[in-house]
Length: 396
Ligand code: PLP
Image 1 (cartoon, rainbow, N blue to C red):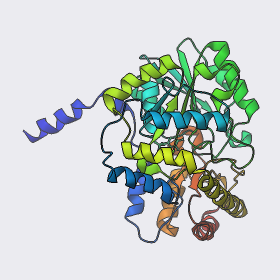
Image 2 (cartoon, protein in one colour):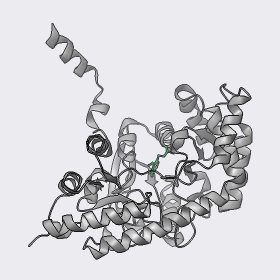
Image 3 (cartoon, rainbow, N blue to C red):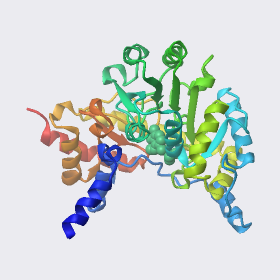
Image 4 (tube, protein in one colour):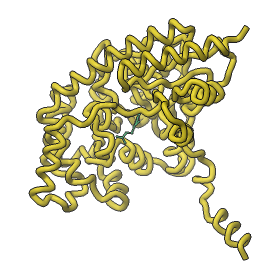
């Protein structure tokens, strides 16, 4: 009787879900939580707490009894603030009542975008390595991910030329995320314009995950939708998690052409319904008066970025200076280890947590993702420990 139950439960799982693996990052967190004294460069999350006035806005909303659903689109006041923000920050205008949906983070935005546009067998082009959710989300939406390899020698930038070689009859969209998790790469306006040119030429959608748009350290971020002639072909995903240190609030947004927004709204209304009202009210406050804190946090990450890049290169782990987000992506060639072996042994021997590059795609192998959204003293101590580790394991 027992074995029948077990077999039956396994058989319930859909082929789509069976085909995807659980996040490789989770596995490391589970391992990490069982070891004392670990310095974590693992989790991709700000070490700052949400600024007080933003938290206060949510506290007040609870005190006033705002505990109900909002419109499926999200609070109109938030959409109006967002439209103003997108115009002043990136020079791109969206109609607050027709072209924006408030989501429970970019995670939901990505899911509803893919489910709204993909028919079984449609192809979606993605960079390799890329953020861990891109490929599983495409697969769960019934699509086929087409990975474009990117390399350290070209700064892990996806090239329009390489994309063009993979465009087929079934290509529906190009999914990009710059500044990039895991590589910290940003794309220049010229590089993005070349992708925009392809989108126009082949009539493709571009899903642009710009969650790290406020965390750039060289030139300013170019919003993909602001490039000439592609706004209506772009689904912009963005949110509050990273730049405002609001990961736990689960709040983000999508901006797109009204027909696409209508389609996405159907998926959103039958699954999520709306983002939490307290988080939406906090997001209004963030947009109205959060600029100083964004800049303060960005400057702090910038200091840490310089320290970690210098430290990694000094100990022989080659690492071009990342231009965005809060990740360094050094190569581990000198050890001859796989990234998983390196990360696991480093955690056990030196109690430093990093994420193996292989969890972000085949071309992430040979690299580590080191998140520097942690204190300078922890970064310095992590580098000292990694130095000891590399000396011990250097290829002879
Ligand atoms: N997109 C990228 C590239 C990310 O790195 C993350 C989180 O790590 C997300 C999306 C998820 O963002 P959110 O918290 O808004 O769901």
